[in-house]
Image (cartoon, rainbow, N blue to C red; front, side, top):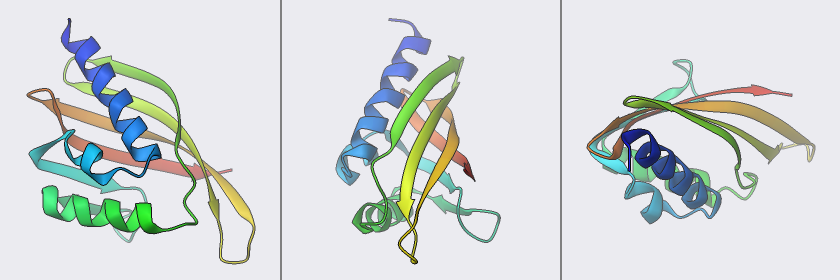
Length: 123
């Protein structure tokens, strides 16, 4: 199996774990020194470095009932980088539902995710 195929499989598994709100499954996909650059927060976004910080943020995301499951779209890889398109719906505090489209840019190391860098826009 080529590295591109291994990376595609890893991104697809990660998307399944994310949609199932499976923090343990997601964490099994990250390297020890991984970084999650979230699309929300003041940086813009917020960066979580290391597995403990990433796990805490994922658990917070997964426990929020306003977050609907992620619907993944196309996946791309090139060398040690990859990208996944996604769509999700989120219930806002006023009860309306907003749809977000985004991409995650990945960097891989040793068959695991070293970087998950998320970008989104509201439709």
